[in-house]
Image (tube, rainbow, N blue to C red; front, side, top):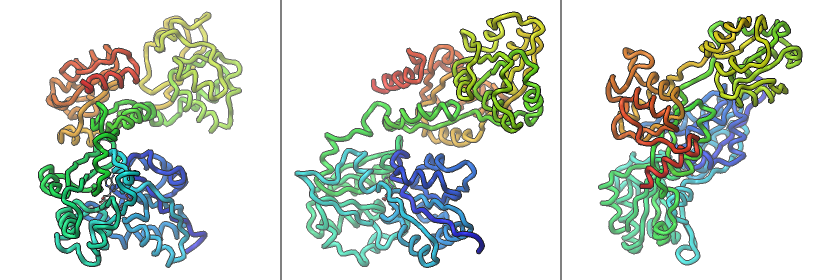
Length: 530
Ligand code: SAH
């Protein structure tokens, strides 16, 4: 072992809703070199880690252990001994079941520094999102959190046959341990839990609720009954883990207090098709309404095909241009990145006039201390070329833009006699990454709505999902049932709707009245609100 030892942070990821991680937990994630995470930690939390941080999935599912506990312990120790900051992200609270204590003991025995960042446990949060407070002035003055498995570790039920779970547990004590009983890992052994509780004197009329995938937008499900009838109800509904089982009078409060699973969008699974940065805000709004946003970014920005050769050359002679016209915000970002790499700064633009194609591009320029001299009234390259002030003839113009940029701008300026140098600053590529997941979910019927916020999102969506033999831009409506009829199509406005109708082979179900994201959200709520 060389150098210093790293630290392991045992972080509570919270029960699911990615906002339910603590500030400390998020900071530890941001600083980590390695993230070791489970199935019950929301995947969205990984976005907090650095892009270059190593991500290791050690999730467990029923009897299939992705990685044995011993191997997880060894992995944590090994990474820390390599000097790395290790984030061990665990569902809920790390010290409420789930073997956080054992991981700490293992590290302690090897002299590896660790710290514990508590999390919001599902034991309390899942009932809360179902509208069930675990205590209440009139109904319950105590609660107990109990494992549905003896000495369990499995994270999920399923490994033990009913009857086997007795062992060390003292049911006569558990049955009266508190007014509210909260069982984790208790779906498979529910029959036994119910039998032992009633045998030991809990009233068969006691209300019971099972909350499955609590706090997970679009996934949370709640089933209620009594000790007397919950077992057949659970069996009938095919209700499976992970769930928290709540036993006690407080369950009755759900009737009045339910909130998360109540609105018109609750439980809807909604595809959001925008570039990732723009998608997140809309996704947040959906999640806050209990819907599951399925982010399908479609587009990813990568370096241009020439590896910046043309942009770098242009950067070295910026002083010779009369105008620099930025065609997009990413073009601004790439220009200034390359400028900095060349050891220069914004002063190279001192002698040139600067144009921005639209407000986002202008904002990007301002963050670099440049106030654009000109911005066209409508946000297109063609408008920029037409409206550019002053004499254009023989003027030298540099246009940093996407490698597949708008040719009309170049043609129009050239036609006016300008000497145009359009250089690729980045490339938009189709992000097929999510396509497989979307295809699977469409096939499984686990997508309710697909939203489109521009014609290009429709085109990219179709191209990303179309079988290759259709080619890019192939028409799904003509090619087959890629968007099943049960899937609601929602568009931000009429021109997007037109493209959708053409490429998807049927008219959209929802067209927003106000052509903005809040407008689209309102239209969705109206549609499903009935
Ligand atoms: N440390 C975790 C519990 C780990 S044990 C915590 O504090 O929440 C795993 C069990 O937790 C599951 O079998 C299930 O009973 C419960 N659980 C975890 N996340 C859940 C969720 N989102 N909804 C319902 N139950 C959950």
